[in-house]
Image (cartoon, rainbow, N blue to C red):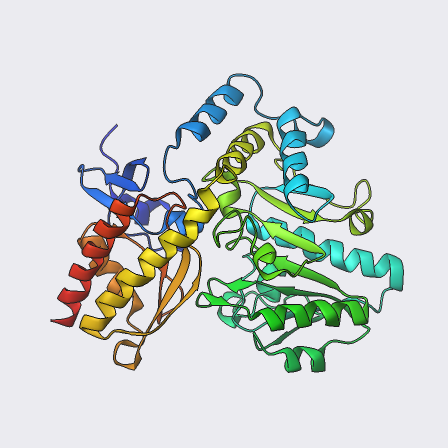
Length: 401
């Protein structure tokens, strides 16, 4: 077979993506190599997915061992890895029950369906309204783009599902004005990821909890991006001290293997009775075996504590660069989910930094046109942080020259 090239992507793929000009072929830890053997430091983490970097030995072992035994059964049968993973997740969180799926969008779809069905069964068909926040992102299904607070993602796909409203993020007064006894659920990201890496205020999230309790509505935390150690806690709600009724998780949950999950309590799980929802691949042995290895690694002593230390190293390095070049309005986020918002002089040029960084051997992300996003491995070595920031500084210097 002739060599695969980036140009061939445009020939054979639907044009909904615009991938970078290189094709990575190998990864180890926080380093990646392309077809020509060129090395890159990975500050993107597969969009906050590769929580343990690339080709982590524990994950490779889990996948290899499980792959030699049992791949797939669908949900006509359960399997040992699924039960073991569900038990681990419920032991480590507020949840009593778990629903497995394949992605964050599916986890949110399950969460939203559960919220509406619970309201329907307990309060009747009029209690069906969902409230989300502007700037939020909850997935790409028709339902989840409707719930997400970024109109560009549903443009051209209308009519979209109804009964959904949006209010400004971190604005408790706006939420209080919108919620009513017809509200089935509020869905919110504790840290808005795609919307610009904006953390929720503690008082805001606590206020949402109180509003939901007052109106018999469920509180859904979308922790697809903020979960599985990203903030320095296993889930961000634990850091805030605010417990949701339903939590969605994916991305880092599989460390690179596709898996998602919805977590909830016994009281609400009961509303999804037999036959009400499902997923052909959800809870498959391969995904669950890898995910269990991810959770076991991330919860080892010292791993989560080190996330904050590494976060401070990142922040210090970014401040040093900003002190010299004056490009940032603000650096915000939590743990190893950081967003550097460009100032007015550089507004709208986030993609320029992305390309310049790639030329210097650094893979990173953006979160909208004005925010540079960093979501590396949670166990990235300090030496890779320092070297990656040096490469980033070279990229900034070229753009600023």
